[in-house]
Length: 188
Image (cartoon, one colour):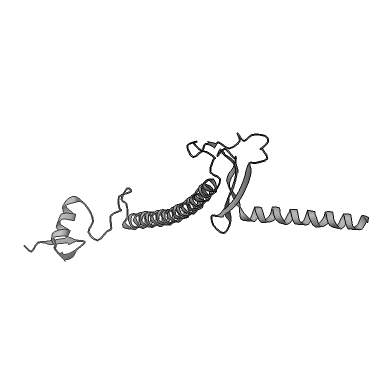
């Protein structure tokens, strides 16, 4: 098909697109304005990149948080394991002490009295025993029991103390003793 259009005394070769434009009333070669609501490819790409960056950031934060929780859980597990090892050692020590202090009659049961229910005064034949068991470098289990001649056991103390606090208390006690000795020496 070789149709020719004549515009202002100029003959132009016809093309399928030009014929359609001429039929619709549009002028060939003139750009038509774009639609107002068209979303460009650049905005979509930008939003996609932002979503990927945010998801990656949240994934990394979740991973870091999970690793920190794992480390904290392992530290708690190690601490509990060390405490119960010291507690078992204290139980063995107490059973050895009870075996060495057997009641006169082997048929009498040995009873344990809960803490804070200890009698106000102990008899002259009761023995008060104390021992410390290391849990780790900073903590120790301090045990103090009273063994009565009849085989009754009273737990006076069974608690964890920090080693640093114990060392500080001993240092303060030593300094107080030295200050007292210096004061008494100066008065003479």
